[in-house]
Image (cartoon, rainbow, N blue to C red; front, side, top):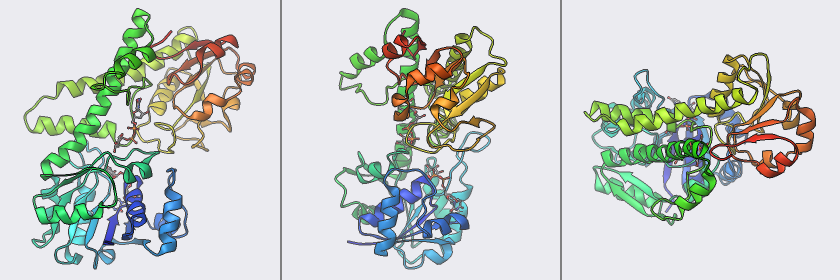
Length: 424
Ligand code: UDX
Ligand code: UDX
């Protein structure tokens, strides 16, 4: 059954949520404070790189089921469900900053219909459902937690084919009405209390970050003992209790979620009297990984990188997105620049200089006269680059492949000195 929905905040999460709910047959109005963004969306322009999202937005607008407006107060009357997808950035003390959530709730409070349901979709610490209830000041409106688990680059797929839908609600009737929105999906719908739902989100992200820090630590051991991390992961992953997913070694994890959510969970635990030493270790290993990759590049040119030209493939925090928030690639490039290196970078999704990093037109021109090439983001396109042309362009043939992306034997045949992560 089609429902009338409002989505506040049209970022990666809000825009994907709105467009997918409209594609499931619901009537959705998306709201944003950014006037320019709303105008672009109303002209059919998608401000982010997200597979399949442009088609969904176009279909939604054409069908009349999806619209974009500025101003939440005007948008929520007549809406049975209102999703909050506004930012919850990291505060100075590491905890999640709820000021946008609270201001959005205060703004819509007086304008909501009786019996409307307000949904926390943004990642919010335990107890935020009550924070929103207080800001709404409406005893006749239910607040529900419905965390998102979508990955950038596959957000549309992850929304429409989730592993689970989690609903956290004190009000069972509201939880059942919420569940009705997702009837079309084939995933288990789990209903629990708000605190558990809010914790599921943080614990899930923290556990995924733990898997990656673990495999990066194992990669360091592999380098020391002469083992091959790719084979080690394969051998581990056959054990169904471990699985193969999220065990790709690399330059460390980043993005708009893992860094802020791991720190926020450490703070949540601390405030509740638990010292989350394990998760602190996970973060330390990640910071160490940035340094390990930086060191590899510096050692590759003999230990002093000042004045040396470095080519870097990859700027975004991972492939298939244009998002550079908390990108490991940018972190490592900046460390190389601080050490005196002259970096020329290339990324399929980044066309202009960013954060003081020079950006080349294409992968080969980025390598012009470079003494070492470092691969930082796992774009498929890098696998198909003509490595003979790269060899010609470079001053010396050296590669540090921080994503184990290239076929090491074929590049070695071209005379490259090749180093991966966790394998010799
Ligand atoms: C957001 C949160 O940042 C993240 O913590 C949460 O887990 C999921 O939702 P994302 O969609 O990536 O993540 O955020 P962002 O891309 O920054 O988009 C937020 C949108 O909200 C922006 O378009 C911004 O203009 C808008 N916004 C912000 C509002 O409409 N109202 C506000 O008060 C603040
Ligand atoms: C993550 C969660 O996966 C998603 O469920 C949640 O909703 C939001 O946060 P996202 O930030 O899009 O999604 O990135 P993800 O694909 O999880 O990658 C996070 C970081 O880990 C990236 O820097 C990526 O390159 C790195 N990574 C991921 C690895 O280094 N190895 C892996 O095996 C997987």
